[in-house]
Image (tube, helix red, strand yellow):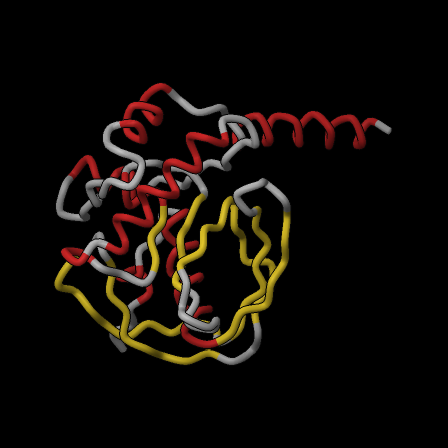
Length: 194
């Protein structure tokens, strides 16, 4: 019985750390521009930005959905901007250490961008493959990275409903790259020089 109460206590502490309400600094950054306005992309060459990129992100709580919706809209504008087009973006790349990513779904018709809140990889396949990657936060660097061909992700949609989905191929690679950002991992950490 004592272990049960300890488990409940630790779970409550972990949840309170992970799902903290939106901070004033986050509100300012999200509101600093029109709903569809491009945001500044954090860069590894900037000391303060690197701290953000290396800090594990926190979950997004269900409350304050309008802020997260605005953040998603601005992240989409940023990743779609012709000056820095990409195939995915994570919230730390626009200065917000929260668990939100936007991924271009090459496995769906018309290749739409979709928003994923609090995504985690819950399973992987056995097959690995190597492919060249780049990153909006690390311009002019491209190199081969080994990743899983198949992943299963668990995430919340914009209405905060939970889903699980199996994803394969290039789109699975994008998910792995962006979820790594949420954990403070950069693709350059995965480059092998042997």
